[in-house]
Length: 355
Image (tube, rainbow, N blue to C red; front, side, top):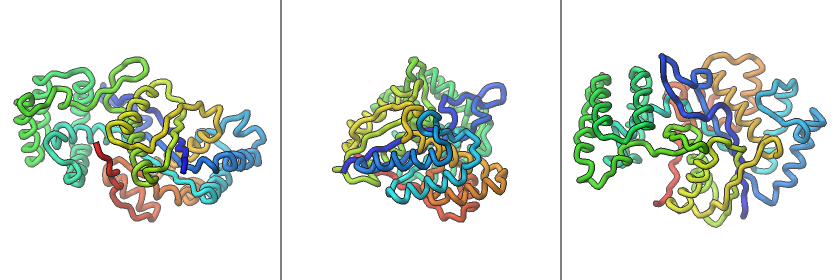
C-alpha cells in the first residue's frame, strides 16, 4: 500500500538565542509541526471533497484564496467540524508534535552535559533525564542556556567545553546532578582514548540553506520524530510513504539530509521520497496548516489560561486529534494540557529503529 504524508508547521522555526535577558522567540515560545497520512488511492476523492467543503463557505477558498490558520474566519468552528468528519471518513492519521523551545535547549544540555549518549544508554534513563530537565528548566539561570547555545554553534574546543561544564556544575544546586557533571568532565578529559572526536561531544551541527551553522532547530527534531514514528509504528515495512512538506526556504537542505539519514543509516526503508510544495498551490498542505495552527492556538490558550467560550468550543471539536499530540515540554505543561482536556496521557512510544 502506498501512502502520502503531508506536513506543515506553525510558528517560527529559527535557531533559538538568548541575549540581553530575552529569548529571540519570547513572542513565540512554542513550535508545532503537524502531519497527516492518507492512502494514495484516496487522495483525489479526499481533495475534491475538501475543496467542496471550503467553497461551501467561500467560493474562492482553496483555489484563488489560500486557507490559513491565522485568518479570522467567522465559520472557523463549522469548518473544523467538517474537517474532523473528513478525517474520520478517510481514516486519516493525524500526528502533532508540540515543542517548548526553551525546554528543547534544556534537553540538549541534559543529553550532552549530564547524561551524554556516549556514556549512557538513553532508553534506560528516559524518566531520569526528564526529571533533571524539569529541574534545570525551572532553576538554571537562562544566561547559562544562552552560553550553551553559543558554545555549541561556535566552538569545537575541549578547553572551552570543560570551562563551561565546570561553571555549570557551580550553577546547579543539586548535588546529584553536580556529580554527574563531574563524571562527564573526567570522561571527556581523555576523549581520544575512548575513541571519541571533539564533534561527538557537542550536538550535531546542521547548516541552513545559506550555510549558517545551527544545532537547536525545533523543527528538525519534530520532523525526525514524526517521520520515524509514522514509518516504524504506524506503517508496515512494505508500505511506501511519500513525504510532502510545505516549502522551506531556510531549512529544506537540513530536512532532506535527515530524511536520507533515516533511510540509509537507520534503515527506515519504507520512505519513498520527499518533496517541498508551496501551500498556496496545494490544498492538501493547507489542510494540515489549518489543523496545526488551530491546535497550536488551543495549546497556547490552555497553558496561558486565556481561552474564551469560542476557544473552548474549538477545543471540544479538535479533541479527537489532541490525543495524537506529542508534547516536548516540562511535566507541568503536559499535565495542564491533558488535564484540561480530560485526556489520560503516557510517554510517547520510541520507534524501534536499527542503525
